[in-house]
Length: 129
Image (cartoon, rainbow, N blue to C red):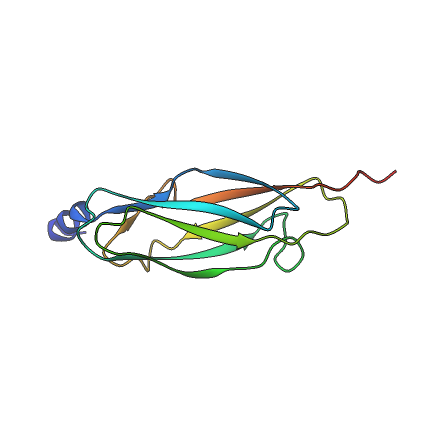
């Protein structure tokens, strides 16, 4: 990287999740993840996000989502809401992730540590006997 690109990146705001892990219960209708912008808030910034299966599966435990978060000048926080699916099957604690895309950020630098948020979905069904 050139000194110019490093200098420009240092002037850009950093975008990241406010927490590395979020918790929800299966019968919650949505889980809300907070994305924050640090440093300069004088420019319009954009960052893409997408869900990713782990033990929780899109279409079975949650609704897959992707999109663009837009921070207008002066805005420092935005929320992503992921719809949850309540089923009657016991599944323990399941997990999916939401990722901020480092490559497609506009007027922002995505944090290297808090660009992924783990969502743990706690089952509300009775253990089968």
